[in-house]
Image 1 (cartoon, rainbow, N blue to C red):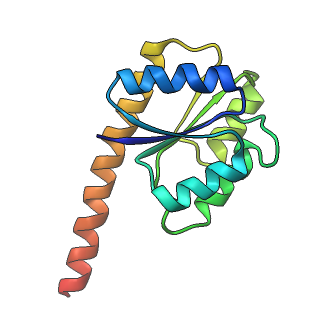
Image 2: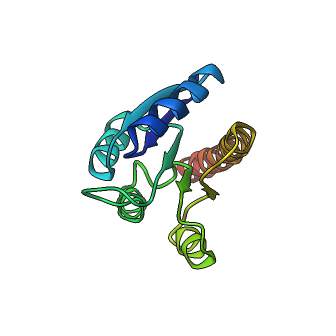
Image 3: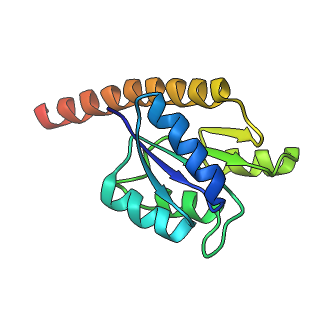
Length: 139
């Protein structure tokens, strides 16, 4: 079962999204702010992270930056889920390295589709990284 870390400060949205993801056969870990989310990501190494942008303590941009500086977490697929829907906000998220950006409100199909496509892409990239490191060790 794939592990998802959901970082969202809105308790109702966090609970509803968790339920939706669990019904889609994902193991879900949650954090109510970016600082807690970053700590959980470093410990749990989830398969994918879904993160709000506007949160207390550490915002989503800070979470993504922190993950990208850590060798153990920098390859984890990252999706922003945010009410910030202006083009400049979406562009900023993508420029910082987000794999996808889903504006709120979102549909169940949109979220699940984004997760599945990012997990599939990550699987291919992980296989390529593993093959590359094995060939480097053999040389």
